[in-house]
Length: 263
Image (cartoon, rainbow, N blue to C red; front, top):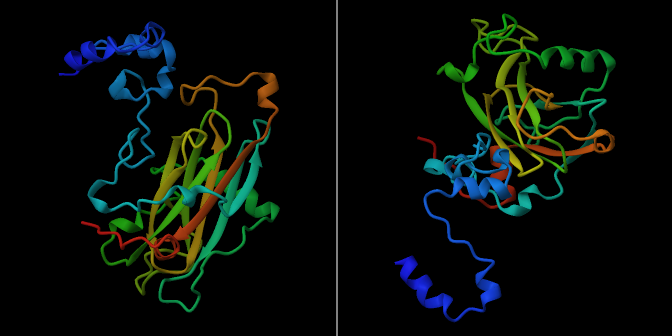
């Protein structure tokens, strides 16, 4: 049907306009890759980009209504703004989290900036799920009440960032002592994302109890990702990282969204 309609329409168009239009068939990948780098072209169009950090992939969709459909303004003027560089590629942020039924309506505190704290964050950043220092995922334990928080962030340039989120509870969660004081729990493992291409929204499931949330970012290494590494001059320009972290209730209230239905 489209081919028939195009044959009728092209007779009315100026030849200069027609010369700028290319109708591609099933073998479109080769032509698209001439115009778009493979790491920026979605995989279903022949590229290698999957946008695994976005709900729905490269063409975002909201699966089963269990992810907040935030408006564009939700990614403007985020609460925190810092600079990272290839010389100092890491940034860490820690906030205190109060239980939902606490008198403290807004649980977000100030980052802990002592040298000892920053050094401890650097050691945490290399942890994986199988690290012996990490306890089991608290969200897999049905007797521990949970809550949801959301991390929004974006960058103005770069070739990708690796993000990781840890949870540090205050004291034991129950009389049985599920968590000891100062044990770290890996909430979101190291994941390479592209915040310079599109804002990133992460859903974080944590126990509904007092603790600290630790968010770590670093610039992608040479061997991570497919984007080319910047030249010497470009590498001198700092990367601006903007981010906000909010409880689900605060986020829904701020942007007047409907409660999220979780199956």
